[in-house]
Image (cartoon, rainbow, N blue to C red):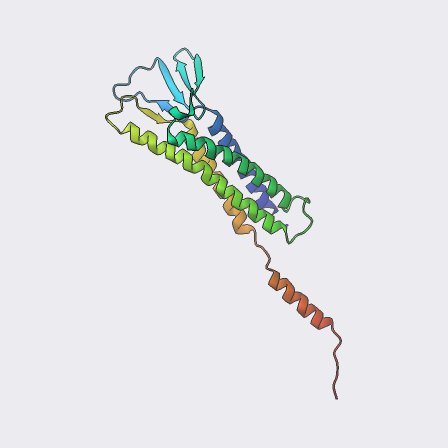
Length: 209
């Protein structure tokens, strides 16, 4: 039961990472209008996300429109859609697996199987963290590249979802790393050796003349 506290922390990290991934998937705040240089018109602000783009007026009125076609999106956003959806699904599955194999639950009675279950959940959280960090970093790199391109008239800046995605990915990696470090799988050889010595000690001794 010594790892119960670690498992509780990892469950919390997994849930926070899942919330961050859902925010990145739902909120259109990946790209935002830049008002640097000659772009001094602040009457409206354009934001873009995975599924739609929005225009926010200075009065606070917001109008959003879904993308007409998947083909008009860049390769980074097309890949981000699939990777973040897979990230959310993998995080949910990993947290449920961790609940089943955690030391603070009694879903699994076999104590030898619990470290293996926790290790599986840790690997799943690490993969989910990578699936969240990769598309966010890819999109951020494209935004910075286009921003520094003098031939690009419409400059965009990093949106809030980029930073939320980085934070969520780090939380998932941290939770998965803790599970992998503290889930010590017992080897079958030591148990067999202990059983052998136990049987040898309990066996009756024979005296030969």
